[in-house]
Amino acid sequence: MTLIIGCVTKEYGIVAGDTQLSFGDLPRGNFDRLVKVKVHQYGSDLMMGILGNWGYISPMKDGTGTHKDYFKTLNREIQKPVVNDKHAYLKIFLPGKPIIKATAICIKREKSFVLDCVTSDGDSTTIKTIDINGRKLMFNEPFYSTSPDFIENRIQEFCAEHKLTDDIQDSIFLLNNIILEVIAKGKALDLSTKGVTSMDIPNTVGGYVTMQVMTDDIHRMNCLYSVYKDSKVLLDGTTYPFARTVDHSGIINYVDNLAMLAKNSVNSHNGITGELKEVLVNQMEFLHSKEILSNDLINNLIDVMNDKYKLKLVKIKEDKADESMVLFLGGDEAEENHEFYRRFI
Image (tube, helix red, strand yellow):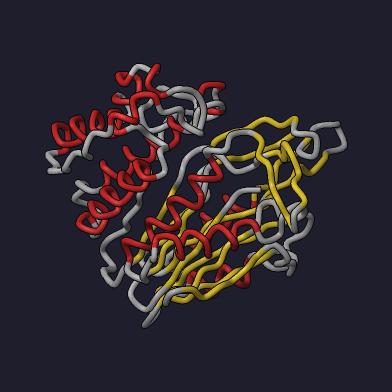
């Protein structure tokens, strides 16, 4: 299962998610992973993240089959000029669809922003809604059967630890890191519930973070990710997101994510570039404080971002203790070639 988080206040709405599509023997951890973008915006009044299975194979008498894809049908129909209320159309289109088990966490722009969940079969067991620090969040629990409160607990803990407010910068920072943290854990993770730890749980969340931000400016789409012709690559255009090197070192995920923030903080098509620059600074301070990246690597990347994007980022003060630091996300980063990470920026 993927991870989708929706967030609204009176001033903005955000939908974020990962890009992993998992198929195979999930209970035993034997599954393949493909990249599929699951966060979408339709005009100026609706955006959503999709979960579950939106299609099926209909068998034919000759032994072949026809693939029925309701998501492709929705994309085609919902954008027709005759559809005046896209949210209302979604609520009519999806419920009652046979065979599939599909969910959409969506945000509608009205006088304020409305957060909603629409399912094909009425089952919203894994979907939660919480109000925290002036914002309303809706999300699914991808590890519901093993740890039903995993994502909720991480959101609550992260907000408390970083003293996050309901401003847009803090909400982007929150959603970005909750999803990124799960992605960076790799193909398997350990989960604890009521003192009982389950080992090597298949991690069906992966790829890279995608995000759409909606503000009062109806002319801005604020799409904070790139879609590639080759959907198997990260932002540097060369690294397969499920390669062995990525699975064994979350550093790549975090550096790649920094690149997304940096590129969008100077993207004139975004109406929130100032806010994204603040998120970028906060993200680097977070990576430093949690020792996810060394000072040396962060400052190396700052040099690249300042030069390439004409930013004026201030370097983090050097800490000699970092020279022998072993990063918890895998391996001794000091032994890695910084040139490998620089290319992501």
